[in-house]
Image: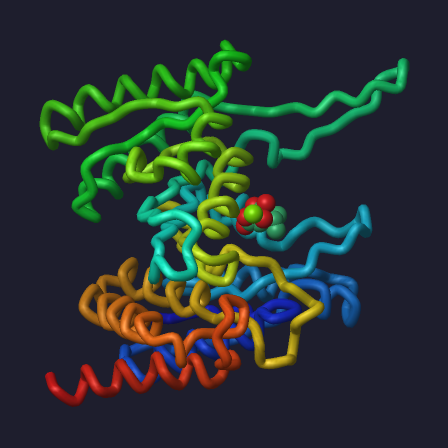
Length: 340
Ligand code: IPM
Ligand code: MG
């Protein structure tokens, strides 16, 4: 039995997480599910956005399934998602973006973005100088860069991918990003020799352009925290929208799975959120826990549902609500299970 800590969060989080749970349930995987509240609702009720109890439950679980969070402008509020990434040392943020049907994709993308998840500008260390200027610190460590690069190559091999591209801005950040680029090639030599994995590197601005124009250049991308944040939203948009993109936040001891979209409070509780990112995050969780065939069943079911316009959600011009879409995915899985 695998212990799963479910954190539905704010806005559309609970709806899309329910979809993912419905799919997990019909796959009949030995999971024991515990739920906890984290985020704005918890903050408004108790003054704590991430209680010690919730963090403990999350750290004791085999995996965490996360919905989405609203981050208020309140200066006393720190995103619980960032706190979990730091506290659980979830240093690799894996964000696949794949076009499910060319009819609604802006680009025929099939790329996995591996984003460093604990360093960079996300330390958010900012200070005001006497002359009124504001300095923002950005920290990169050699160990931090090495481990994300190594993770990306290992992930590439495990997923039978062929190439890793290092994305940076070393033409301007000649010390920090250049260190990242050099460490990347330090690892790349070994993976080229022993595993035949190819490697190259691009500037982040050029990458933003090529993702849209020539996406076939990319297979697996490894990049720094903020670049990965921005490029993964772009990649999701090119495949149809933020609703499509899943992610896995992985560390050596813990793992958290979440759709990359935010809480979208304007469409919460209206049965219109697209739960694909959440359902695919559940597939990434199953993959991580070793249930590869069940993860594949989710992908196959999603592919089938997207091959038929009548089963699309409203964000891409379809007519299905969150629940009906989920029902279609579940139905495909049950049909597959029946012929097995
Ligand atoms: C993401 C989100 C977060 C981030 C926010 C909510 C802090 O945009 O997971 O991509 O910037 O990492
Ligand atoms: Mg983001």
